[in-house]
Amino acid sequence: MGLLGLLATVFVIATAASLGGGALVRRWAATSGAVVPPRADRWHSTPTPTMGGIAVAGGTAAGFAAVLARPDLLASPADWVAVPLAALAMFVVGVLDDRLQLSPVAKLVFSLAIGAFLVFALAGPQGSLPSAFTLVATVWFAGICHALNLLDNMDGLAAGIGLIAAVFLAVLLAGFLGPAVVVLLTALAGALLGFLYWNRSRARLFMGDCGSLFIGALLGAASLVPIYNAPLAFISPAVIVVLILIVPLFDTGFVLVLRRLAGRKATKGGTDHVSHRLVSLGFSERSAVRILYLLGIAGGTTAWVLVQGRGAEPVLPLVAAFGVLVVLIGIYLARVPAYNAGDFVALQKSSFAPFLKDLAFRWHAAEVLLDLVLITVCYYLAFRLRFEGETFDRFLPYFTASLPVVLGCKLAALYGSGLYQRSWLTFGLRDIASVLRGVGLGSLFSVLTVAYLYRFVGFSRAVFVLDALLLAVAVVATRASFKTMSLVAATRNKRSRRVLVYGAGAFGQTLVREMRANPRWNMNPIVFIDDDPMKAHRWIMGVPVRGSLNELERTLERYAIDEVVLSSPSINGNVEYRIRDVCAGLNRPVLRLYMDIR
Figure 1 (cartoon, rainbow, N blue to C red):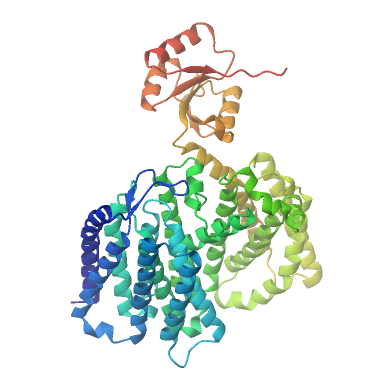
Figure 2: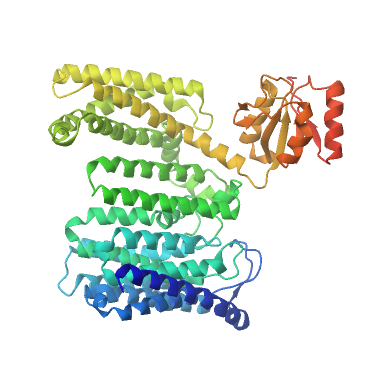
Protein backbone atom coordinates (compact mmCIF):
# COMPACT_ATOMS: atom_id res chain seq x y z
CA MET A 1 0.00 0.00 0.00
CA GLY A 2 1.39 3.41 -0.98
CA LEU A 3 1.58 6.31 1.44
CA LEU A 4 -1.42 8.11 -0.07
CA GLY A 5 -3.51 4.96 0.14
CA LEU A 6 -2.44 4.53 3.75
CA LEU A 7 -3.38 8.10 4.58
CA ALA A 8 -6.81 7.64 3.00
CA THR A 9 -7.32 4.45 5.02
CA VAL A 10 -6.21 6.16 8.22
CA PHE A 11 -8.59 9.07 7.61
CA VAL A 12 -11.59 6.82 6.95
CA ILE A 13 -10.90 4.59 9.97
CA ALA A 14 -10.44 7.58 12.27
CA THR A 15 -13.65 9.21 11.01
CA ALA A 16 -15.71 6.06 11.50
CA ALA A 17 -14.21 5.33 14.93
CA SER A 18 -14.85 8.87 16.16
CA LEU A 19 -18.38 8.89 14.78
CA GLY A 20 -19.23 5.62 16.52
CA GLY A 21 -17.31 6.59 19.64
CA GLY A 22 -19.31 9.81 19.89
CA ALA A 23 -22.56 7.84 20.09
CA LEU A 24 -21.15 5.67 22.89
CA VAL A 25 -19.77 8.65 24.82
CA ARG A 26 -23.13 10.44 24.64
CA ARG A 27 -24.87 7.48 26.28
CA TRP A 28 -22.18 7.04 28.89
CA ALA A 29 -22.06 10.78 29.72
CA ALA A 30 -25.81 10.95 30.21
CA THR A 31 -25.80 8.03 32.66
CA SER A 32 -22.64 9.05 34.55
CA GLY A 33 -23.56 12.68 35.03
CA ALA A 34 -20.95 14.10 32.63
CA VAL A 35 -23.37 16.77 31.43
CA VAL A 36 -22.77 20.52 31.16
CA PRO A 37 -25.77 22.55 32.39
CA PRO A 38 -26.57 25.97 30.88
CA ARG A 39 -24.50 28.76 32.45
CA ALA A 40 -24.31 32.51 32.03
CA ASP A 41 -20.69 32.38 30.84
CA ARG A 42 -21.34 29.60 28.32
CA TRP A 43 -23.03 29.62 24.92
CA HIS A 44 -25.50 26.73 25.14
CA SER A 45 -29.03 26.82 26.52
CA THR A 46 -29.73 23.13 27.25
CA PRO A 47 -27.90 20.44 29.29
CA THR A 48 -25.39 18.77 26.94
CA PRO A 49 -23.24 15.61 27.39
CA THR A 50 -19.52 16.29 27.47
CA MET A 51 -16.14 14.49 27.36
CA GLY A 52 -16.48 13.87 23.63
CA GLY A 53 -12.69 14.19 23.58
CA ILE A 54 -12.66 10.47 24.38
CA ALA A 55 -14.16 9.83 20.95
CA VAL A 56 -11.63 12.19 19.31
CA ALA A 57 -8.65 10.57 21.04
CA GLY A 58 -10.03 7.08 20.41
CA GLY A 59 -10.68 7.82 16.74
CA THR A 60 -7.16 9.24 16.35
CA ALA A 61 -5.65 6.15 17.98
CA ALA A 62 -7.77 3.80 15.83
CA GLY A 63 -6.74 5.58 12.65
CA PHE A 64 -3.07 5.68 13.60
CA ALA A 65 -3.14 1.95 14.35
CA ALA A 66 -3.34 1.40 10.60
CA VAL A 67 0.29 2.52 10.39
CA LEU A 68 1.25 -0.78 11.97
CA ALA A 69 0.88 -2.24 8.49
CA ARG A 70 3.86 -0.09 7.49
CA PRO A 71 6.53 -0.54 10.22
CA ASP A 72 9.06 1.27 8.02
CA LEU A 73 7.20 4.53 8.68
CA LEU A 74 7.79 4.19 12.42
CA ALA A 75 11.56 3.97 12.12
CA SER A 76 12.53 7.45 10.94
CA PRO A 77 12.64 9.89 12.53
CA ALA A 78 12.47 8.15 15.87
CA ASP A 79 11.44 11.27 17.85
CA TRP A 80 7.84 11.07 16.55
CA VAL A 81 6.87 9.02 19.63
CA ALA A 82 7.11 12.15 21.79
CA VAL A 83 4.22 13.78 19.89
CA PRO A 84 1.45 11.26 20.68
CA LEU A 85 2.80 10.78 24.21
CA ALA A 86 2.52 14.52 24.89
CA ALA A 87 -1.02 14.53 23.47
CA LEU A 88 -1.95 11.50 25.58
CA ALA A 89 -0.56 13.17 28.71
CA MET A 90 -2.62 16.31 28.09
CA PHE A 91 -5.66 14.13 27.39
CA VAL A 92 -5.27 12.66 30.89
CA VAL A 93 -4.98 16.19 32.32
CA GLY A 94 -8.19 17.08 30.48
CA VAL A 95 -10.03 14.05 31.85
CA LEU A 96 -8.97 15.01 35.39
CA ASP A 97 -10.16 18.56 34.78
CA ASP A 98 -13.52 17.42 33.40
CA ARG A 99 -14.12 15.18 36.39
CA LEU A 100 -12.33 17.00 39.24
CA GLN A 101 -12.25 20.63 38.06
CA LEU A 102 -8.52 21.40 38.21
CA SER A 103 -7.48 24.98 38.88
CA PRO A 104 -6.13 27.05 35.96
CA VAL A 105 -2.72 27.12 37.65
CA ALA A 106 -2.65 23.33 37.88
CA LYS A 107 -3.45 22.97 34.17
CA LEU A 108 -0.77 25.53 33.32
CA VAL A 109 1.85 23.70 35.39
CA PHE A 110 0.95 20.33 33.84
CA SER A 111 1.11 21.74 30.30
CA LEU A 112 4.48 23.40 30.88
CA ALA A 113 5.93 20.27 32.46
CA ILE A 114 4.70 18.07 29.62
CA GLY A 115 5.98 20.64 27.13
CA ALA A 116 9.42 20.59 28.76
CA PHE A 117 9.67 16.80 28.44
CA LEU A 118 8.43 17.03 24.85
CA VAL A 119 11.15 19.55 23.97
CA PHE A 120 13.77 17.35 25.62
CA ALA A 121 12.62 14.36 23.55
CA LEU A 122 12.61 16.35 20.29
CA ALA A 123 15.98 18.00 20.91
CA GLY A 124 17.72 14.86 22.16
CA PRO A 125 20.03 14.53 25.18
CA GLN A 126 22.64 16.84 23.61
CA GLY A 127 20.18 19.55 22.55
CA SER A 128 20.14 20.93 19.02
CA LEU A 129 18.97 24.52 19.52
CA PRO A 130 19.92 27.38 21.88
CA SER A 131 18.40 27.43 25.35
CA ALA A 132 16.24 30.44 24.46
CA PHE A 133 14.50 28.33 21.81
CA THR A 134 13.92 25.62 24.39
CA LEU A 135 12.11 28.06 26.65
CA VAL A 136 10.06 29.46 23.77
CA ALA A 137 9.17 25.96 22.54
CA THR A 138 8.00 24.89 26.01
CA VAL A 139 5.80 27.97 26.39
CA TRP A 140 4.56 27.54 22.81
CA PHE A 141 3.34 24.00 23.49
CA ALA A 142 1.49 25.09 26.62
CA GLY A 143 0.10 28.13 24.82
CA ILE A 144 -1.35 26.11 21.94
CA CYS A 145 -2.93 23.66 24.40
CA HIS A 146 -4.71 26.46 26.23
CA ALA A 147 -5.51 28.36 23.01
CA LEU A 148 -7.54 25.40 21.72
CA ASN A 149 -9.08 25.07 25.16
CA LEU A 150 -10.23 28.70 25.04
CA LEU A 151 -11.37 28.33 21.43
CA ASP A 152 -13.84 25.62 22.45
CA ASN A 153 -16.54 28.20 23.12
CA MET A 154 -19.07 27.57 20.35
CA ASP A 155 -20.51 24.52 18.65
CA GLY A 156 -18.12 23.03 16.09
CA LEU A 157 -15.52 25.80 16.39
CA ALA A 158 -12.54 24.10 18.05
CA ALA A 159 -13.13 20.83 16.16
CA GLY A 160 -13.38 22.55 12.78
CA ILE A 161 -10.36 24.79 13.34
CA GLY A 162 -8.38 21.79 14.61
CA LEU A 163 -9.34 19.87 11.45
CA ILE A 164 -8.22 22.72 9.18
CA ALA A 165 -4.94 23.17 11.05
CA ALA A 166 -4.17 19.43 11.05
CA VAL A 167 -4.68 19.21 7.29
CA PHE A 168 -2.49 22.23 6.51
CA LEU A 169 0.26 21.07 8.88
CA ALA A 170 0.29 17.60 7.33
CA VAL A 171 0.32 18.91 3.76
CA LEU A 172 2.66 21.88 4.01
CA LEU A 173 5.24 20.53 6.45
CA ALA A 174 5.26 16.85 5.51
CA GLY A 175 8.94 16.99 4.58
CA PHE A 176 9.89 18.22 8.05
CA LEU A 177 7.37 16.23 10.09
CA GLY A 178 8.21 12.75 8.88
CA PRO A 179 5.73 10.05 7.73
CA ALA A 180 4.66 8.96 11.23
CA VAL A 181 3.61 12.47 12.34
CA VAL A 182 1.85 13.07 9.02
CA VAL A 183 -0.16 9.89 9.57
CA LEU A 184 -0.93 11.01 13.12
CA LEU A 185 -2.22 14.39 11.92
CA THR A 186 -4.29 12.65 9.24
CA ALA A 187 -5.83 10.46 11.92
CA LEU A 188 -6.61 13.55 14.02
CA ALA A 189 -8.26 15.23 11.02
CA GLY A 190 -10.44 12.18 10.40
CA ALA A 191 -11.38 11.91 14.06
CA LEU A 192 -12.38 15.58 14.16
CA LEU A 193 -14.49 15.20 11.03
CA GLY A 194 -16.37 12.32 12.64
CA PHE A 195 -16.77 14.26 15.88
CA LEU A 196 -18.20 17.28 14.06
CA TYR A 197 -21.30 15.20 13.32
CA TRP A 198 -22.09 15.37 17.04
CA ASN A 199 -20.55 18.77 17.79
CA ARG A 200 -21.90 20.96 14.98
CA SER A 201 -24.64 23.44 15.86
CA ARG A 202 -26.77 22.56 17.80
CA ALA A 203 -24.24 20.38 19.54
CA ARG A 204 -25.36 17.04 20.91
CA LEU A 205 -21.96 16.37 22.46
CA PHE A 206 -19.21 18.63 23.79
CA MET A 207 -15.55 17.65 23.58
CA GLY A 208 -14.72 18.86 27.09
CA ASP A 209 -11.22 19.78 28.23
CA CYS A 210 -10.03 16.26 27.50
CA GLY A 211 -10.80 16.93 23.84
CA SER A 212 -9.56 20.51 23.48
CA LEU A 213 -6.34 19.85 25.41
CA PHE A 214 -5.71 16.67 23.38
CA ILE A 215 -6.19 18.52 20.09
CA GLY A 216 -4.08 21.46 21.22
CA ALA A 217 -1.32 19.19 22.48
CA LEU A 218 -1.19 17.17 19.27
CA LEU A 219 -1.12 20.29 17.08
CA GLY A 220 1.34 22.08 19.37
CA ALA A 221 3.70 19.10 19.57
CA ALA A 222 3.53 18.45 15.82
CA SER A 223 4.21 22.13 15.09
CA LEU A 224 7.48 21.90 17.05
CA VAL A 225 8.83 18.96 15.05
CA PRO A 226 9.77 21.10 11.98
CA ILE A 227 11.70 23.49 14.23
CA TYR A 228 13.98 20.70 15.43
CA ASN A 229 14.15 18.88 12.11
CA ALA A 230 15.11 22.03 10.21
CA PRO A 231 17.07 24.21 12.67
CA LEU A 232 18.76 26.17 9.87
CA ALA A 233 15.38 27.26 8.54
CA PHE A 234 13.92 28.19 11.91
CA ILE A 235 12.09 31.34 10.83
CA SER A 236 10.31 29.85 7.81
CA PRO A 237 8.65 26.88 9.60
CA ALA A 238 7.79 29.13 12.53
CA VAL A 239 5.99 31.63 10.30
CA ILE A 240 4.15 28.83 8.51
CA VAL A 241 3.01 27.31 11.81
CA VAL A 242 1.77 30.69 13.09
CA LEU A 243 -0.23 31.25 9.90
CA ILE A 244 -1.79 27.78 10.11
CA LEU A 245 -2.73 28.26 13.78
CA ILE A 246 -3.81 31.88 13.34
CA VAL A 247 -7.37 31.43 14.66
CA PRO A 248 -6.56 29.99 18.11
CA LEU A 249 -3.60 32.37 18.49
CA PHE A 250 -5.69 35.38 17.44
CA ASP A 251 -8.63 34.46 19.67
CA THR A 252 -6.43 33.85 22.71
CA GLY A 253 -4.42 37.04 22.30
CA PHE A 254 -7.58 39.05 21.65
CA VAL A 255 -9.36 37.77 24.76
CA LEU A 256 -6.37 38.03 27.10
CA VAL A 257 -5.55 41.61 26.08
CA LEU A 258 -9.14 42.87 26.36
CA ARG A 259 -9.78 41.07 29.64
CA ARG A 260 -6.62 42.61 31.05
CA LEU A 261 -7.64 46.08 29.89
CA ALA A 262 -11.14 45.55 31.29
CA GLY A 263 -9.77 44.53 34.70
CA ARG A 264 -11.17 41.01 34.39
CA LYS A 265 -9.48 37.76 35.29
CA ALA A 266 -7.88 36.15 32.25
CA THR A 267 -8.87 32.68 33.49
CA LYS A 268 -12.51 33.50 34.06
CA GLY A 269 -14.73 32.29 31.24
CA GLY A 270 -17.16 34.52 29.44
CA THR A 271 -18.95 35.26 26.19
CA ASP A 272 -16.29 37.71 25.04
CA HIS A 273 -14.39 35.67 22.46
CA VAL A 274 -14.08 36.54 18.79
CA SER A 275 -16.92 34.15 17.95
CA HIS A 276 -19.21 35.73 20.55
CA ARG A 277 -18.54 39.23 19.27
CA LEU A 278 -19.39 38.12 15.74
CA VAL A 279 -22.74 36.90 17.07
CA SER A 280 -23.19 40.23 18.89
CA LEU A 281 -22.79 41.92 15.51
CA GLY A 282 -25.83 39.99 14.29
CA PHE A 283 -24.32 36.91 12.66
CA SER A 284 -25.85 33.56 13.53
CA GLU A 285 -23.75 31.09 15.54
CA ARG A 286 -23.17 29.00 12.43
CA SER A 287 -22.14 32.05 10.40
CA ALA A 288 -19.71 33.14 13.12
CA VAL A 289 -18.09 29.70 13.14
CA ARG A 290 -17.88 29.68 9.34
CA ILE A 291 -16.21 33.09 9.32
CA LEU A 292 -13.51 31.75 11.63
CA TYR A 293 -13.21 28.66 9.45
CA LEU A 294 -12.56 31.00 6.51
CA LEU A 295 -9.97 32.90 8.53
CA GLY A 296 -8.22 29.61 9.34
CA ILE A 297 -8.31 28.58 5.68
CA ALA A 298 -6.99 32.01 4.67
CA GLY A 299 -4.10 31.62 7.10
CA GLY A 300 -3.33 28.14 5.77
CA THR A 301 -3.56 29.36 2.17
CA THR A 302 -1.16 32.21 2.95
CA ALA A 303 1.21 29.65 4.44
CA TRP A 304 0.85 27.54 1.28
CA VAL A 305 1.80 30.53 -0.90
CA LEU A 306 4.79 31.13 1.35
CA VAL A 307 5.86 27.52 0.97
CA GLN A 308 5.41 27.62 -2.81
CA GLY A 309 7.50 30.76 -2.93
CA ARG A 310 10.08 29.01 -0.73
CA GLY A 311 10.14 31.97 1.63
CA ALA A 312 11.21 34.32 -1.17
CA GLU A 313 10.89 38.04 -0.64
CA PRO A 314 8.10 38.58 -3.24
CA VAL A 315 5.58 36.67 -1.08
CA LEU A 316 6.50 38.38 2.19
CA PRO A 317 4.18 41.38 1.48
CA LEU A 318 1.32 38.87 1.27
CA VAL A 319 2.11 37.75 4.81
CA ALA A 320 2.24 41.40 5.90
CA ALA A 321 -1.13 42.06 4.22
CA PHE A 322 -2.69 39.08 6.00
CA GLY A 323 -1.28 40.34 9.29
CA VAL A 324 -2.80 43.77 8.68
CA LEU A 325 -6.17 42.12 7.93
CA VAL A 326 -6.10 40.19 11.21
CA VAL A 327 -5.18 43.33 13.16
CA LEU A 328 -8.01 45.30 11.53
CA ILE A 329 -10.51 42.57 12.38
CA GLY A 330 -9.28 42.60 15.97
CA ILE A 331 -9.57 46.39 16.27
CA TYR A 332 -13.06 46.33 14.78
CA LEU A 333 -14.31 43.51 17.01
CA ALA A 334 -12.83 45.17 20.09
CA ARG A 335 -15.45 47.89 19.60
CA VAL A 336 -18.30 45.39 19.85
CA PRO A 337 -19.82 45.50 23.36
CA ALA A 338 -19.05 42.42 25.42
CA TYR A 339 -18.54 43.84 28.90
CA ASN A 340 -20.61 45.94 31.25
CA ALA A 341 -19.82 49.65 31.37
CA GLY A 342 -18.11 49.26 34.74
CA ASP A 343 -15.69 46.61 33.55
CA PHE A 344 -13.13 49.14 32.34
CA VAL A 345 -12.83 50.88 35.70
CA ALA A 346 -9.45 49.23 36.27
CA LEU A 347 -8.14 50.66 33.01
CA GLN A 348 -9.57 54.10 33.64
CA LYS A 349 -7.96 54.30 37.09
CA SER A 350 -4.55 52.97 36.05
CA SER A 351 -1.54 55.29 36.07
CA PHE A 352 -1.03 54.93 32.33
CA ALA A 353 -4.67 55.57 31.35
CA PRO A 354 -4.10 59.24 30.38
CA PHE A 355 -1.16 58.21 28.22
CA LEU A 356 -3.20 55.52 26.47
CA LYS A 357 -6.08 57.91 25.92
CA ASP A 358 -3.79 60.50 24.35
CA LEU A 359 -1.98 57.94 22.27
CA ALA A 360 -5.01 56.07 20.99
CA PHE A 361 -7.57 58.79 20.52
CA ARG A 362 -5.79 62.12 20.07
CA TRP A 363 -2.76 61.15 18.05
CA HIS A 364 -4.26 58.07 16.40
CA ALA A 365 -1.02 56.20 16.96
CA ALA A 366 -2.45 52.93 15.68
CA GLU A 367 -3.33 54.54 12.33
CA VAL A 368 0.12 56.05 12.02
CA LEU A 369 1.82 52.73 12.76
CA LEU A 370 -0.43 50.98 10.26
CA ASP A 371 0.46 53.54 7.59
CA LEU A 372 4.12 53.03 8.43
CA VAL A 373 3.71 49.36 7.48
CA LEU A 374 1.64 50.15 4.38
CA ILE A 375 4.15 52.69 3.07
CA THR A 376 7.03 50.25 3.53
CA VAL A 377 5.22 47.33 1.89
CA CYS A 378 3.94 49.40 -1.07
CA TYR A 379 7.34 50.98 -1.71
CA TYR A 380 8.95 47.53 -1.64
CA LEU A 381 6.31 46.10 -3.99
CA ALA A 382 6.85 49.00 -6.39
CA PHE A 383 10.55 48.11 -6.60
CA ARG A 384 9.67 44.45 -7.01
CA LEU A 385 7.24 45.14 -9.86
CA ARG A 386 9.65 47.46 -11.63
CA PHE A 387 12.82 45.36 -11.27
CA GLU A 388 13.04 41.59 -11.47
CA GLY A 389 15.62 38.88 -10.74
CA GLU A 390 19.21 40.01 -10.58
CA THR A 391 18.19 43.53 -11.55
CA PHE A 392 16.17 43.82 -8.34
CA ASP A 393 19.14 42.67 -6.28
CA ARG A 394 21.21 45.45 -7.82
CA PHE A 395 18.59 48.11 -7.03
CA LEU A 396 17.62 46.81 -3.56
CA PRO A 397 20.27 48.95 -1.77
CA TYR A 398 18.61 52.07 -3.20
CA PHE A 399 15.29 50.96 -1.72
CA THR A 400 16.89 50.40 1.68
CA ALA A 401 18.77 53.72 1.63
CA SER A 402 15.78 55.82 0.52
CA LEU A 403 13.10 54.12 2.69
CA PRO A 404 13.52 56.46 5.71
CA VAL A 405 13.19 59.49 3.46
CA VAL A 406 10.05 58.11 1.79
CA LEU A 407 8.52 57.21 5.16
CA GLY A 408 9.09 60.71 6.49
CA CYS A 409 7.74 62.48 3.42
CA LYS A 410 4.63 60.34 3.10
CA LEU A 411 3.69 60.29 6.78
CA ALA A 412 4.02 64.08 6.91
CA ALA A 413 1.91 64.45 3.76
CA LEU A 414 -0.80 62.13 5.05
CA TYR A 415 -0.94 64.06 8.30
CA GLY A 416 -1.07 67.37 6.46
CA SER A 417 -3.96 66.12 4.32
CA GLY A 418 -6.10 65.77 7.46
CA LEU A 419 -6.42 62.02 7.08
CA TYR A 420 -5.85 61.33 10.78
CA GLN A 421 -8.75 63.57 11.79
CA ARG A 422 -11.28 61.48 9.83
CA SER A 423 -13.39 58.62 11.17
CA TRP A 424 -13.05 55.16 9.69
CA LEU A 425 -16.71 54.40 10.41
CA THR A 426 -17.96 57.19 8.14
CA PHE A 427 -15.28 56.93 5.45
CA GLY A 428 -16.66 58.18 2.12
CA LEU A 429 -15.89 60.05 -1.10
CA ARG A 430 -14.65 63.20 0.64
CA ASP A 431 -12.27 61.12 2.71
CA ILE A 432 -10.94 59.47 -0.46
CA ALA A 433 -10.05 62.95 -1.70
CA SER A 434 -7.94 63.45 1.44
CA VAL A 435 -6.20 60.14 0.82
CA LEU A 436 -5.41 61.01 -2.79
CA ARG A 437 -4.18 64.46 -1.77
CA GLY A 438 -1.95 63.02 0.95
CA VAL A 439 -0.56 60.21 -1.21
CA GLY A 440 0.01 62.57 -4.15
CA LEU A 441 1.85 65.16 -2.05
CA GLY A 442 3.84 62.43 -0.32
CA SER A 443 4.96 61.00 -3.64
CA LEU A 444 5.87 64.46 -4.94
CA PHE A 445 7.93 65.25 -1.84
CA SER A 446 9.60 61.83 -2.08
CA VAL A 447 10.57 62.36 -5.71
CA LEU A 448 11.96 65.85 -5.03
CA THR A 449 13.93 64.63 -2.00
CA VAL A 450 15.33 61.62 -3.82
CA ALA A 451 16.26 63.80 -6.79
CA TYR A 452 18.08 66.20 -4.48
CA LEU A 453 19.90 63.54 -2.46
CA TYR A 454 20.67 60.98 -5.16
CA ARG A 455 20.21 62.92 -8.41
CA PHE A 456 17.80 60.05 -9.23
CA VAL A 457 20.70 57.67 -9.79
CA GLY A 458 19.51 54.11 -9.09
CA PHE A 459 15.81 55.09 -9.16
CA SER A 460 13.00 54.87 -11.67
CA ARG A 461 10.06 57.21 -12.09
CA ALA A 462 7.87 54.16 -12.66
CA VAL A 463 8.67 53.04 -9.10
CA PHE A 464 7.12 56.18 -7.64
CA VAL A 465 4.07 55.95 -9.91
CA LEU A 466 3.48 52.32 -8.91
CA ASP A 467 4.13 53.18 -5.27
CA ALA A 468 1.54 55.97 -5.33
CA LEU A 469 -1.09 53.73 -6.90
CA LEU A 470 -0.45 50.87 -4.47
CA LEU A 471 -0.41 53.12 -1.43
CA ALA A 472 -3.63 54.89 -2.42
CA VAL A 473 -5.40 51.55 -2.82
CA ALA A 474 -3.98 50.23 0.47
CA VAL A 475 -4.92 53.32 2.51
CA VAL A 476 -8.43 53.49 1.04
CA ALA A 477 -8.94 49.74 1.63
CA THR A 478 -7.89 49.91 5.28
CA ARG A 479 -9.95 53.04 5.99
CA ALA A 480 -13.01 51.62 4.25
CA SER A 481 -12.64 48.28 6.03
CA PHE A 482 -14.60 49.31 9.13
CA LYS A 483 -17.48 50.65 7.05
CA THR A 484 -17.43 47.48 4.96
CA MET A 485 -17.44 45.28 8.07
CA SER A 486 -20.35 47.25 9.51
CA LEU A 487 -22.26 46.92 6.24
CA VAL A 488 -21.69 43.17 6.09
CA ALA A 489 -22.69 42.77 9.73
CA ALA A 490 -25.84 44.87 9.22
CA THR A 491 -26.96 42.96 6.13
CA ARG A 492 -26.25 39.57 7.72
CA ASN A 493 -27.88 40.34 11.06
CA LYS A 494 -30.25 37.45 11.79
CA ARG A 495 -32.10 39.38 14.49
CA SER A 496 -33.02 42.32 12.27
CA ARG A 497 -36.40 42.77 10.63
CA ARG A 498 -36.37 42.66 6.83
CA VAL A 499 -37.58 46.04 5.60
CA LEU A 500 -38.90 47.25 2.26
CA VAL A 501 -38.31 50.99 1.83
CA TYR A 502 -40.92 52.68 -0.37
CA GLY A 503 -39.19 55.59 -2.11
CA ALA A 504 -35.54 55.50 -3.20
CA GLY A 505 -35.00 59.27 -3.16
CA ALA A 506 -32.96 61.34 -0.71
CA PHE A 507 -35.19 60.44 2.26
CA GLY A 508 -35.06 56.75 1.42
CA GLN A 509 -31.29 56.78 1.10
CA THR A 510 -30.97 58.58 4.42
CA LEU A 511 -33.24 55.99 5.98
CA VAL A 512 -31.17 53.10 4.63
CA ARG A 513 -27.97 54.71 5.87
CA GLU A 514 -29.41 55.15 9.37
CA MET A 515 -30.76 51.60 9.50
CA ARG A 516 -27.30 50.26 8.83
CA ALA A 517 -25.58 52.65 11.22
CA ASN A 518 -27.99 52.19 14.13
CA PRO A 519 -28.09 48.53 15.30
CA ARG A 520 -30.64 49.39 17.99
CA TRP A 521 -33.30 49.73 15.29
CA ASN A 522 -32.90 46.05 14.32
CA MET A 523 -33.92 46.93 10.75
CA ASN A 524 -32.26 45.54 7.63
CA PRO A 525 -33.10 47.34 4.35
CA ILE A 526 -33.62 44.60 1.77
CA VAL A 527 -35.23 46.27 -1.22
CA PHE A 528 -36.60 49.56 -2.57
CA ILE A 529 -39.89 50.19 -4.37
CA ASP A 530 -40.03 53.46 -6.31
CA ASP A 531 -42.52 54.84 -8.79
CA ASP A 532 -39.80 56.57 -10.85
CA PRO A 533 -39.22 54.29 -13.89
CA MET A 534 -35.67 55.65 -14.22
CA LYS A 535 -34.73 53.97 -10.92
CA ALA A 536 -36.35 50.61 -11.64
CA HIS A 537 -34.06 47.58 -11.62
CA ARG A 538 -31.06 49.60 -10.43
CA TRP A 539 -29.07 49.38 -7.21
CA ILE A 540 -28.98 52.36 -4.85
CA MET A 541 -26.63 52.21 -1.82
CA GLY A 542 -26.31 48.48 -2.39
CA VAL A 543 -30.09 47.94 -2.23
CA PRO A 544 -32.00 46.83 -5.36
CA VAL A 545 -34.93 48.86 -6.68
CA ARG A 546 -37.67 46.44 -7.76
CA GLY A 547 -40.17 48.40 -9.82
CA SER A 548 -43.16 50.44 -8.77
CA LEU A 549 -46.35 50.00 -6.78
CA ASN A 550 -47.57 47.27 -9.14
CA GLU A 551 -44.60 45.13 -8.02
CA LEU A 552 -45.22 45.65 -4.29
CA GLU A 553 -47.13 42.45 -3.48
CA ARG A 554 -44.77 40.23 -5.48
CA THR A 555 -41.71 41.89 -3.90
CA LEU A 556 -43.06 41.46 -0.37
CA GLU A 557 -43.45 37.73 -0.89
CA ARG A 558 -40.25 37.20 -2.92
CA TYR A 559 -37.98 38.89 -0.35
CA ALA A 560 -39.86 37.69 2.78
CA ILE A 561 -40.32 41.28 3.94
CA ASP A 562 -41.34 41.83 7.56
CA GLU A 563 -42.44 45.47 7.34
CA VAL A 564 -42.69 48.44 4.95
CA VAL A 565 -41.44 51.98 5.63
CA LEU A 566 -42.72 54.97 3.66
CA SER A 567 -39.70 57.24 3.30
CA SER A 568 -41.12 60.42 1.76
CA PRO A 569 -43.98 62.79 2.66
CA SER A 570 -44.91 62.81 -1.04
CA ILE A 571 -46.13 59.22 -0.67
CA ASN A 572 -49.76 59.91 0.28
CA GLY A 573 -53.32 59.90 -1.02
CA ASN A 574 -54.34 56.99 -3.25
CA VAL A 575 -50.77 55.65 -3.42
CA GLU A 576 -50.53 55.37 0.36
CA TYR A 577 -54.01 53.82 0.53
CA ARG A 578 -53.06 51.11 -2.02
CA ILE A 579 -49.78 50.41 -0.19
CA ARG A 580 -51.55 49.95 3.13
CA ASP A 581 -54.24 47.82 1.50
CA VAL A 582 -51.69 45.43 -0.05
CA CYS A 583 -49.70 45.22 3.20
CA ALA A 584 -52.83 44.61 5.25
CA GLY A 585 -53.73 41.69 2.98
CA LEU A 586 -50.31 40.13 3.64
CA ASN A 587 -50.27 41.10 7.33
CA ARG A 588 -47.26 43.41 6.94
CA PRO A 589 -47.11 46.53 9.13
CA VAL A 590 -46.53 49.89 7.47
CA LEU A 591 -44.42 52.60 9.11
CA ARG A 592 -43.66 56.15 7.99
CA LEU A 593 -40.51 58.26 8.30
CA TYR A 594 -41.09 61.73 9.78
CA MET A 595 -38.17 64.11 9.36
CA ASP A 596 -38.28 67.77 10.34
CA ILE A 597 -36.27 70.39 12.22
CA ARG A 598 -37.92 71.95 15.24
